[in-house]
Length: 293
Image (cartoon, rainbow, N blue to C red; front, side, top):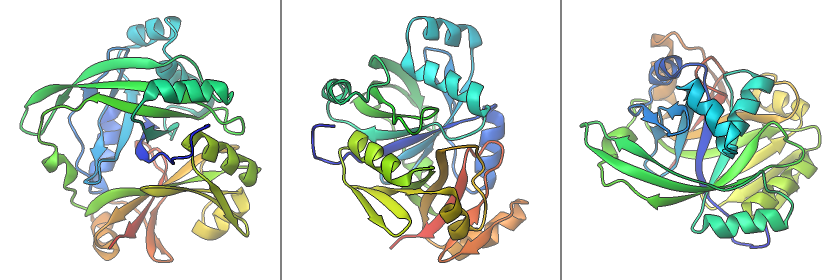
């Protein structure tokens, strides 16, 4: 991007074959999962909201006819989701989303920098809180793609209308989760991928040894080669080729999460000061729980 102000994380998109599977898995991990949200173009979600304003968006296809019509109409969000599923399967981690104050300006910048993934998208959908109160959420999106990550995508999300509902109950989690800390990406050329992501985010890329990082106002994106990732976390990336492989979540107490998960039949292990949960159906990526101050 031509601007220099780094964009913050807004949310992450985690495709799922079934929202029921995603809801069951994420609830077992100790998250509070929001009621199903329905998009006007065939997809639906069941989000996990954090107290810092970020969230995770498990995404499934709810109406294939609407989806196909949206793709034919040039809806970039639905097309990229459909392309991801065709290439990678129905479960995974497809998009990193940044907050935006002006999606139109972001789109113009992506076009000028030859990073645009297609036309902007504006839409609204109902939002329901835990008490059943409903309001309308409206968004405007500008899309980008990194050449070294062709099956994934990025977008800047401008929240045009924040629903007047109480989200606090949805932001309290049994596992003590409070915020999105970061994302880990694997790439055959981490330096090049870091430079591309930094340009999309309007941020700077830094490197230290085999680790490359893009720092954002509210988190960071680590870019590693497959060998470095396996050495750091003790598992191989659960994807073929380059892509998004791990979500770091801040929690109050890692030991409490470690005690909770075996009761749910979920395997985990300590890695450094954090707790690693490998990817599973409905989860989208590996999760890494870290304590925050």
